[in-house]
Image (cartoon, rainbow, N blue to C red; front, side):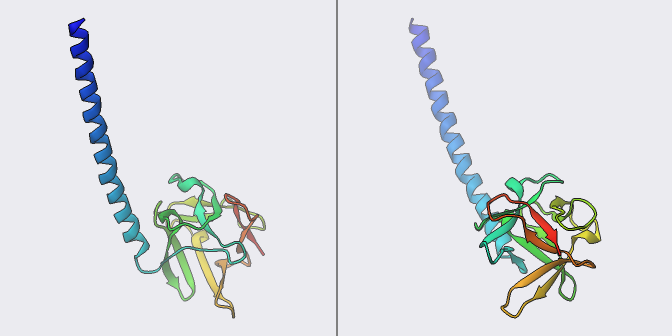
Length: 166
């Protein structure tokens, strides 16, 4: 019985020490992650891309880093997965780099009305070239380069696919 009590005390002590180590690790990791987010959000030419009618932003679904994940509309937060670096290719034409996944988005198939956008490695194709067309009210239309197709929301709810439309 005495051995059992000693063993339980040792196990309890080990769990307390492990819990403290886990908590300290989480605090250190959180601090590091927040520094990375703050750094990325303050890089030059980084912005959220917000639909003016819904007030919601473009992001990769569930902030997933895999290729082929759909691009969706989502409520605005100051998150890296909702922050895009604008890499200028030509006047008013940009390659968009997600600051969390380090990838871009493009049509899932041949560009056409209703085609969804999905995440792919950065810079692999001209289907990632986006023209920003300034409007009189200081907003922009975003058009797929060399087409008459524009980035458009499919619905107003979070996680609604982003699509191309004339």
